[in-house]
Length: 116
Image 1 (cartoon, rainbow, N blue to C red):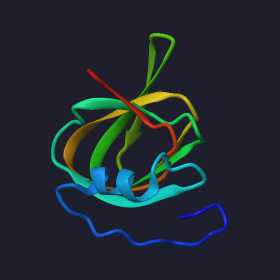
Image 2 (cartoon, rainbow, N blue to C red; image 1 turned 45 degrees about the horizontal axis):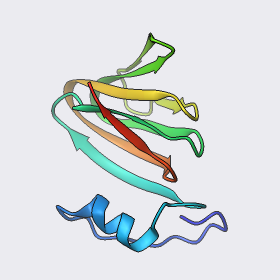
Image 3 (cartoon, rainbow, N blue to C red; image 1 turned 120 degrees about the vertical axis):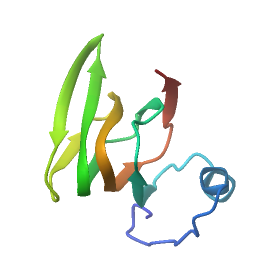
Image 4 (cartoon, rainbow, N blue to C red; image 1 turned 90 degrees about the vertical axis):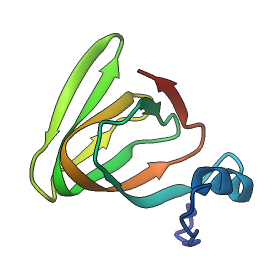
């Protein structure tokens, strides 16, 4: 979605994130609205410097782990509809206890990833 509210659908494929980068570059002024299903813990951390990220549990059970200055905060996602606003610039990852479906609204510009 653009800052002006226009939505641009993008088909999901094995090259989804590379396709996004090719089509939208650095995501400046855009937000990714996406739904993903996880059956295992995330294998990396991510951070969004362009704004807060909305994460909503649709099904399953998981927890988000937020890390700032070496300190971790764990936020349980136990029931559908539970959501978290991950603050701008905060590294985060997820632990999955039951296969989980989540909705994300992500400010994409400048997103960074790092391994565990």
